[in-house]
Length: 169
Image (cartoon, rainbow, N blue to C red; front, side, top):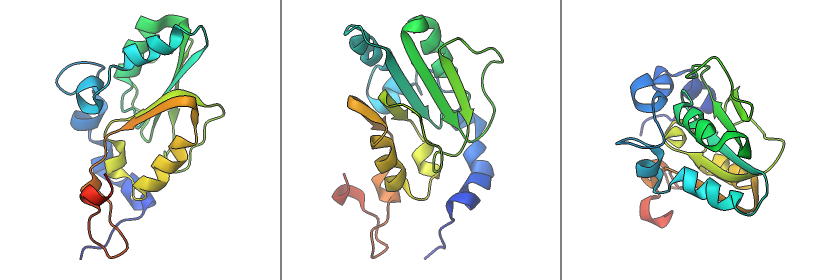
């Protein structure tokens, strides 16, 4: 069996910074959030905005944050959007007022307030303790919040070293 890398070694890996696969994702299109996660991020946020409260979206492993810039332009000041990525390679130098981009590892970063929506498109593929990150992220949700991520359950190994697959799903 191959030796698994720890989070620090994974974070130093050039695969994590793969610009083509992870960095240029938009909200829509063939590799957009809707296709990858099965939700319309803007619709989820707009539905929550109808309640009149402030809405917050956290995107873990946001890449260049292209999708977050798109959402910020469409939603304006009605939604606070936070993107966290290991690499400081964001799509634009200017920051809309309600868009905050953070360069940090999702294995150690902690938010200050809960979120209505937390997404992670492909970032979990590059994290050692995937279930640990998901468990922590679930704790960052507002009471009626939604956590949506793309996770290959075959990449999670159970105690006997066998891929969890359907058992985890």
